[in-house]
Length: 111
Image (cartoon, rainbow, N blue to C red; front, side, top):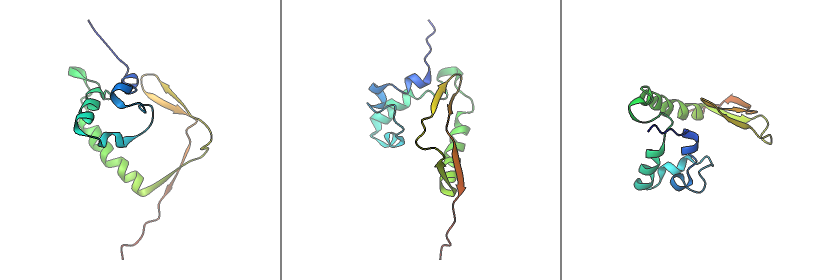
């Protein structure tokens, strides 16, 4: 028997990720080891088993390097913060009406 599940649906499992599973809360991954281990077992963004993404490790290294650097160097401002955006889930997830202005942060001298 072949069983498949959409990762978006698995990541919305309130029994695993909490009652606020639909909310963006990265700090949930800083909880106790037992909870984080359970969530990690349900984290399917790169697939599971013998056909999982072969680029997973390099992608995670890049994300763990790139995201902090972007947040450190740039400000991200929603152009229309009152306007709701729509999330679509096809092969990949994408958003509509999500417009952001990116501005380089001014750096301070370390003196």
